Image (cartoon, rainbow over the protein chains, first blue to last red):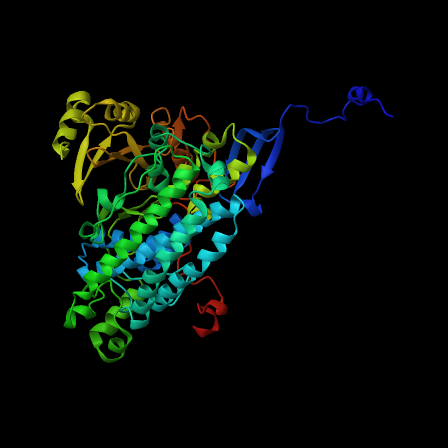
Length: 411
Length: 172
């Protein structure tokens, strides 16, 4: 039988670290972090004493790249910000360009955009919320709703041909009109998804285990959230009803009736509930948009882009038959279109909050400077404050309920 | 809307003197250019004044104008009064040799990473920042990549003898 006390008197080898707490690397590629996030966590037992985030693992210099690209080539860059809801980023970029170029889009284009944007919001929120479920031990919901993200992706596919990094739409409108399959799929989604969402809510919102894991963890007060420049669902969960769609409507959001769900405590549970509430609102917005679209008759029902030949790529059949279209086609593709001089800041309500584009043009062919206000990057700095004193397992849930997307974080 | 652009202009001119500011209203957005020594005082005044109440910091970023001798770098603040729903853009210019600008972290904790990002890419030295180090780039980097002296590849360059990319080579 060895004497325990003897062990303590053995001197530690040279260079050993002597301290009361444990330092642990969480990430950068840990399965529980859903992305490339590294946190150096200082643990006392299982309680977090302090944590420091490292960001930038997938930094791709988007702002620099954008300085050498004509406007239409920046769209694929925006895809890769928050890749769970690329269409929102694309539309944000198109509306920014339209603001700079002074393009007025037809109402039908706005409504089509609203449909796509709200579908993207649902896709983003359902991933975030079901991932919160996964991290609290409930895999079922995640697998169940995945089928409906697939349906949303199929709708994107009908409109633009791609699924994840969509590059959807063009400056001035869409690349083509929505086809009948797209509308049928949207209707199918509107019919089926509410039942699924209801079931998803039944699974979680009054589930004792889920409530115990999420209520009171990762909480932030409204004052602190504002001080940290929170936006989006995370700010609304703390009780501030700021939503860019209402504060500064774009793409004709002023024509729609919807509510802004808010929480009270700003904890993980409230964030979950706010996102669920927003999905219901998004469904209602899409329904309203479909009704508005049905009112366009005759030639009006074929409008899917503004009449701006300088910026909107002409149809291929026109390129082959019309001189004008051929000229514009080449000028646009080669990036030989000069932009007006000016500075705009334009924001849209992304899935994570205020997604802003600060675009400076010096009258050249590419942006002089483009800065993305990435909501994720801004609110992630509050993470140590949210998890200090919490259990390690709660920190994981907090991280997923903040909806951190590495692409948006690292630009 | 209670808070108008005229009120903002008047209040700031009264407090700090009209000589200090240049005002601009483009694309329906009021922009004020202020001296860099006053940036923190102005931000604090905008924050604390009950009428102005610009208490939400939307964004901080920088811009490089290499031809603007003596004031090559601009730091751009986007402020938001959420109650009145009014935005204000503020710019301060600084020389590239000594890019010192006071930090806004004491007013807005959220400014911390925004300023680190701005430092990372433009080398703006935010005086008083609690931890001014690179954030997205590697720590060993010894230059500020978004400055204009580091141009991206010129698409029309001819020194690249690369048939694989369809440029130059034997096809020319």
